[in-house]
Amino acid sequence: MSKLGWKVTALAFALPLGFAARKAVAAGWRAVRHEDPPEHHNDFEAGWGETLVWAAVSGVAIAAAELVAARGAAVVWRSLTGNEPPGHEHEPAEIEA
Image (cartoon, rainbow, N blue to C red; front, side, top):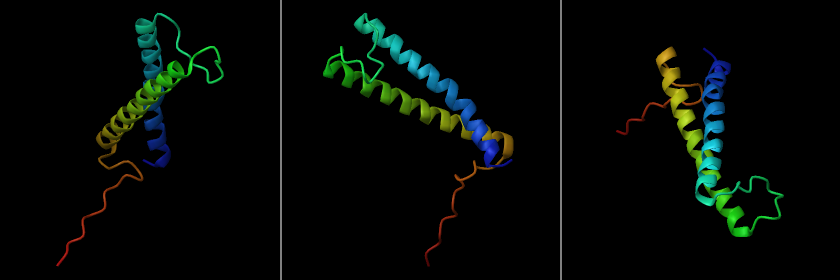
C-alpha cells in the first residue's frame, strides 16, 4: 500500500476521534459549569479565565485524540500490511565497533 493508503487509514481514525473529543469536552464543561462553553474565540462575553481554561482543556483533549488516532491507525496499518506506516519506518541501529 502507498502513502495515500496510510493517509486514508489515519484520517479514518482522526475524524471520529476528534469529533468525539470535542463533544466529550463540551459535555463535560456543561456538566460542571451548567452553561455552554466559550467555543468561539470572538465570544467577548466570556471572561479571560473561563476562555483560557476552555482553550487548555480542549487543546489537551484534541492532542490526546490525535495520539490515540495515530497509534490506532498504525496498529491497523501494521496488521494489514505487515509493515510500519510510510514515513515511520525504524532505522536499523548502527553498531559501534
